[in-house]
Length: 236
Image (cartoon, rainbow, N blue to C red; front, side, top):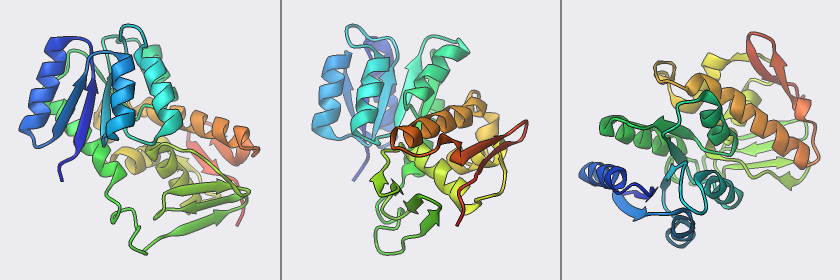
C-alpha cells in the first residue's frame, strides 16, 4: 500500500503543487487548508507523514505540531516561509523531523519525504517480526524492534528521530559521538549536504533531555562534549 501524506497548507497553489508532485511519485495525498481541519484529519486518517505549514490561520503550525507530537510519532515535515534560523529551530524543538523553506523544489520535497519515511521504516524493518535488538544502559531500556524506550519502568514518548538518536548513543554508551556521526544515524550520509541538518542534532538532544527530566530521570545522562558532540553516560 502506498504511503498516505497529509498536507496542511493554507496557500492553494503550494498545496496543489505539493499534492500533484507527491501523487505523481506514487503517494496517496490528503489536503487540509487550516490547522483545525488538518489536526482532525491527522487524528482520523493516521497518515504516514504530515507536511505542515508553519503559518496557518487560526490554529497555527506550531500548535498543530505540538498537539500532534503529544499524540503520535508520525514524521512531521515543516514548511516555512521564514528563513530565520530561530523559526526553523522552534519547529525542530516542537518535534518536527525536518523542514523546508518556501519556495522549495518539488523534487527536493519528494526526496525529503522519502528520506523521512525510510527513517521510520515498515514494521518488519523495525524488527517486529522477532528480530528485536534491546539495549539496557543504566536506567534506560531500549527496544529497537518495538520502538520503545523505558526509563526506570516509565515509558518515554519519543519521536522517530529522538528514538534513533538515543539508540545510537546507547549502542556506544560511554563513547563520544560527533554531530556528524549522529547526523548519519538520523538522516543518512548525505545529510551534511542539506541545509539546516547541522542544528537538528542539538534540538533533538534538547528535547530528549527535557523528556528524561519530565520522566524523573537525569537529563545529564546525555553529556555534551564541548566542540565534539555527545555521549550517553549511563552505565551498563
